[in-house]
Image (cartoon, rainbow over all chains, first blue to last red; front, side, top):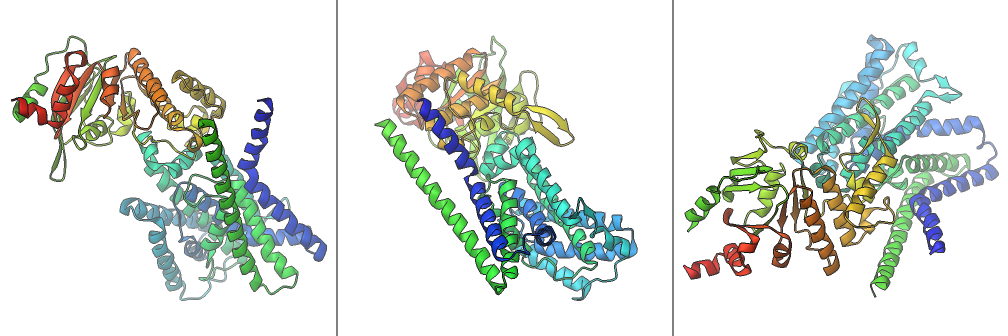
Length: 333
Length: 267
């Protein structure tokens, strides 16, 4: 009995953290291989560049994480990213940088909320609705810019994206700050608890008096706001905004979210896993380049990693279920 | 016969005790379908009322109306002296009305503690819309509630999908009891349970009533109904066709009222 109590404890820990442990091991392994094969890779400067490459995907993944945990999804974030970046750049030309960034956040929030409201009202799959917005918003960006990048933003606006905090570029700091905040929200507040609950059983939440509509609309709004912020940061960082920004951003974000252990059906996931997945994807991408391999392999490896991870997860889940059923049967007999 | 039945339902003698909750002439239509027709029902403290009826008789609709999920097309709901214009689920909770559903409305992905405290998590401190969970208090409170139901759970954090049917039922009942101070409705509480767990659940229902709360038990199982209820209310085609103290009726009468078959034969 005493032994029994100890074994389930580490088993339970492994069950809860196995996914993250696996991701961390994969990340460590990838870094180790790179450190040996390409000495220049493991320098602070290079790692900062990698982090910067992943910052925008990481920020988008955070928004997608809390949407998916609540049982929703927004596919339009790639186009929204481009739209808010372009609008921030345009605004920056005629107003102070602060207004441009705020404008991008507000625009992102408003469009996110609009998506959410439409999904709520029409009661259709968010995949269908936001697939539509994905196309619409990309079209709007192209119409707005005539297909050309918005250049010549004032230098002050351009400088903000170059700021560094403790040696880290602003987008990376934003990612880390948002990640910490998202983790806190999901694990320590009623808001996060209710998001998980809605992803688990929406009807139960309605019966329990949880303001489901407000939470679902709120998560779309916040998601849009986050994308707006990162769009503005991108425009500032690059000193210009291209209408082709953020193509396939939604796919990268969803890849990271699923690889990070968020259940596509909602109700399960954690920020640490998603951040580990973002890091792993970033290291795979940049590592393949620095090893001198054809960068097109990066996409292949990315896809294979996702499939391998979810397959492994599903198989171990099935094995656990079977074990549980068998031991339950044994108890019954 | 039909008109007699509804007359009988409306002319309930003025109660000696104050009713915790009264439904007066509740009607509900779904499109052209009449789900409930002038249903009146008084619920008293400590009384277990069994609500019986065939499938589609309107039991679930009545439960939904009492818990504020559906709004009636006609009729009034009284909570003591108060009569809300339009009862919402939130308001019903505020009035202390709780329902334990047939398909247990649990979040399978959350632990027992989180499920019991769902929607009323203890808060350590609040910062605008951010309410910080008080996890230890939630756990002790949930443990106490589940203990009152008479079940011991090893791990309050394990997702409830890993629990047995009886344990899940206990979690659902424990959750209802957090907030219920007026009325608890049990929708087929023993449908998925074994003999022992059924017994335990019925015992719990008695204990709930002993706290002075009105209890409505919806069940197809007449053994359960006669074992715990004090009054039996039968619905047929959305109308109350029987409303009698349990000791003054028989299974045959109840079945007849539910189906309408034997009663018409007797006439």
